[in-house]
Length: 110
Image 1 (cartoon, rainbow, N blue to C red):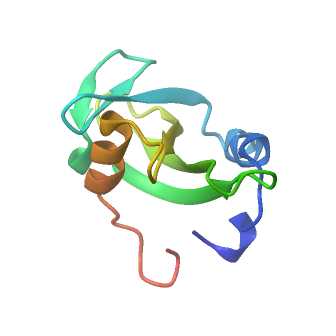
Image 2 (image 1 turned 180 degrees about the horizontal axis):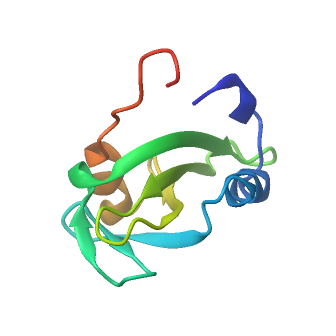
């Protein structure tokens, strides 16, 4: 998470990433797997390139904890986002994917 993403709403984060070319959508699948909805290929989250991560917490409800990850599909090269809940309200699929996403970003940009 960078200073530029601090305090963004979910809609703000998605709009920002879309403006940067992250237009595809991804979803969490059981077993720590990410599904690209552009090419419909499932990939282990550990093999997905994480370009940026933005945490979003609801201003009216701090328990509304969501992470928006900007990722690139290793199969088709599409750039897009995956929205993952974390904390006590997170699904097993979201938790597994968030824990397994490979963060290859240079230190200082995390």
